[in-house]
Length: 114
Image 1: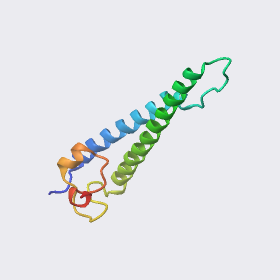
Image 2 (image 1 turned 180 degrees about the vertical axis):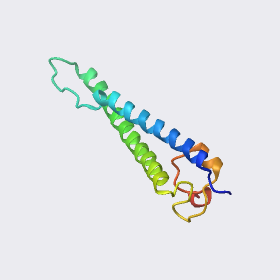
Image 3 (image 1 turned 90 degrees about the vertical axis):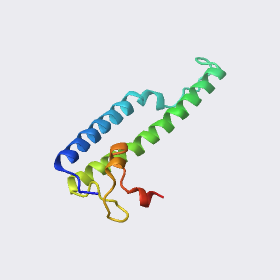
Image 4 (image 1 turned 45 degrees about the vertical axis):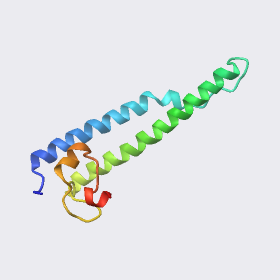
């Protein structure tokens, strides 16, 4: 595979920056859902509290996954800045363009992914 062009890298950078901004915006918007659940039975019934706790647990897990994806995106942006974007982090070969189009944050080629 040929090396990525400056134009392709610029397009991947724009995609990654947009994804990073979306992830940050979603994290900020869901901050309220991750707050501790009120345990005062005088204000909320037992079933409502259980439901709220389940919703909080799902929001925490979603937040954890979002943070993990944000780290992947930021690492890809760092590879762009460092000139290593498009090279497999494991073997050093070029990551296939088709694979990068599917997931611009991927750090490894298909051969090393298996």
